[in-house]
Image (cartoon, rainbow, N blue to C red; front, side, top):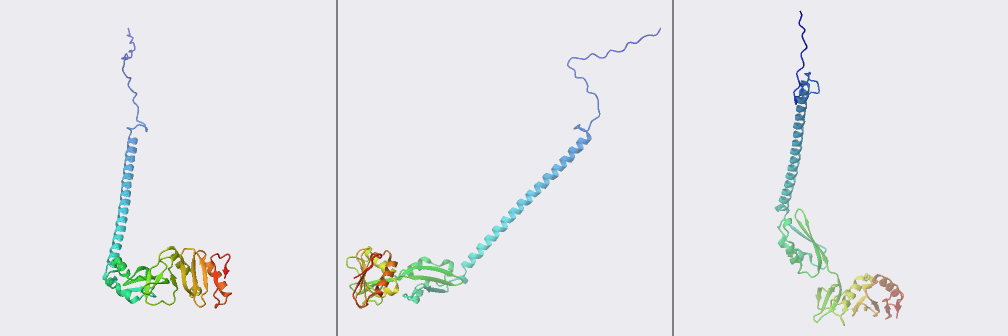
Length: 288
């Protein structure tokens, strides 16, 4: 009699056990697949090539920048060296001192007093010594020094402008507008008016006003002035040569306008007539 076989029961699941995963072939998205590993290696090599290229590019740029700085620094250093060698070279030593702008001063005497600068390189000129040498000339109001390569030192002088003379116990002193004596003489100096210091003194406000008026006068009127006085800043008067015509000028204000008015008034009068012109108020001039 045939024996009937019963089917086997499936194994009983154990509590906590994980059922085995079904065995499948690796797909393209599997990180452990051969394709994924090839792509990973390819990406890694590409990344390394990029990093090496960037490193070389950065290094080359840094080297070029350093090279540019080195070239620039060397060029500047070379230029400074050339300038220093040229400036302090005996080839650029002072061989000529040229004094310019003198009229009353003796240019040859001034040049001789600056002889200690001869032979010095132009870059080593002693400006303090020049100042001391020129201080002995009171007629010099100011000066400037110019180095003219290869071997000339030029001194441009601005002389004081004499405006009037004052009488002293020993003669006459010719003064500029600042009251500096530029010339002394035992006799009256021709071509300059005599400044009356009665009631004032050199350097006072009255003196300054009289000097300012003389400085502002046109040459045709200034040449006729014989004497001038300025007790106060608002009371400047002067007297012409010849018949002794006088002028009440007042203050130095509006001197240009006063000079034009005075010229017109003079043209209306007889030069031999001892009249007085009052232009202290230019809006209402008076002839007395």
